[in-house]
Image (cartoon, rainbow, N blue to C red; front, top):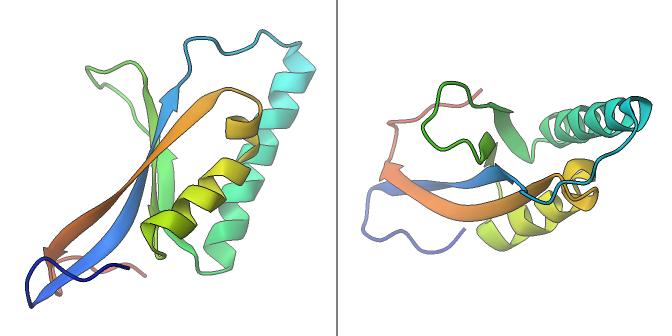
Length: 110
């Protein structure tokens, strides 16, 4: 993680997953395989302690936003992991990583 903008701050890396407008059309069984691989990949990152949480968005105004991943690693490392996501590699999603700063102790992740 980079240096906090001021003392008493903590940071996490957020990765926004955006739907690609040019997502390839695939047979249903291939789409099911990619979706399961995507979920398994996220679970493996959680189990390894690299990710705190991940999940889809609903009811948003921006239809391109698919989901959010909260990483426990720096932004560059999170970008590397996000690029390995099977849904990203399949051309379904584009990851956008950024560091989110907040007051120390405000956010507790298990």
